[in-house]
Length: 62
Image 1 (tube, rainbow, N blue to C red):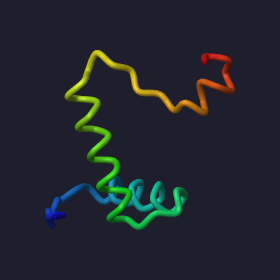
Image 2 (cartoon, helix red, strand yellow):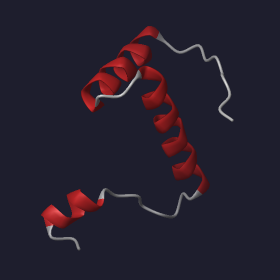
Image 3 (tube, one colour):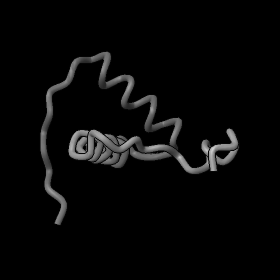
Image 4 (cartoon, helix red, strand yellow):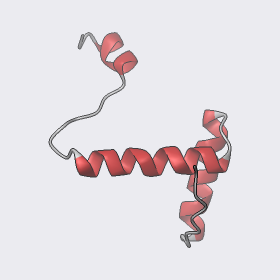
């Protein structure tokens, strides 16, 4: 079950998060949760480079 966690972040960071959520067509809550999950994955698996498959495909990386 999802949990509510309250975070205090600088105004500039909050605005960047709002802007990113709006561009992605997600709610602020969705985007914040996705961003936090991504950060946690990157820290847990620091030796693995996560990439978007679509980006790699168009760059000829696949």
